[in-house]
Amino acid sequence: MALVPTPSPQDILEDLAAEFDLLGDWEERYRHIIDLGRSLQPLSDAEQCDANKVRGCSSQVWIVSQVAPNGTLVFRGDSDAHIVRGLVALVLQLYSGQAPEAILGLDPHEAFARLGLSTALSSQRANGLKSMVERIRHHAQTAMATRN
Image 1 (spheres, rainbow, N blue to C red):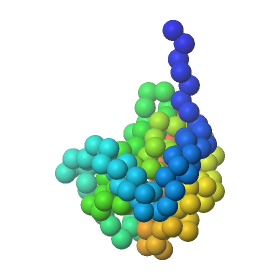
Image 2 (image 1 turned 60 degrees about the horizontal axis):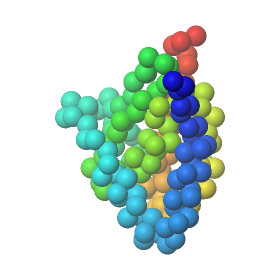
Image 3 (image 1 turned 90 degrees about the vertical axis):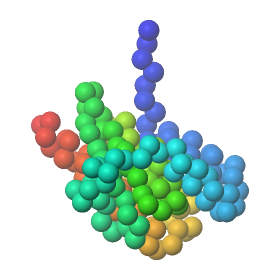
C-alpha cells in the first residue's frame, strides 16, 4: 500500500484560498474562520502555561509543538477569543505535520496576502498572527538545529 504524501504548505494554502474565494465577503470569511476555530481540540490547563504562550497577541494564545517520529512538526493551539482561535486553526492547517524545511519555505507574508488577511485584519490581530507564525518558525529552526 503506497503512502499518500502530505500536502505541502503551498498546496494547503491554495486549497484555503479557493475556500476563501468561494465565500465572497469578509463577513462570511470571518464566520468560516470562527468555524475553523471550533474544530480545534482544547489544550489542557497544564498546556496553557507561560512557556507555551505566544507573545505579541492581544488575546491569549498558546501553541504546543512536538517533533513526530518522521521528523515533521506537529502543532496544537488554542486561544480565549473566537476569531483568534480560528486564526490559530488556520495557521495550524498550514504548518502542522510539515517538515521544518517546508515550514521555513513558506513565506507567511505572501500566504496571508493570498488569503486576503493582510488587509482584512486589524493591526492587533495581524501582529498576533505574525507572532504565531514567528513562534512556529522558531520551532522549525530549533528542530533543524537539533537534528544536525
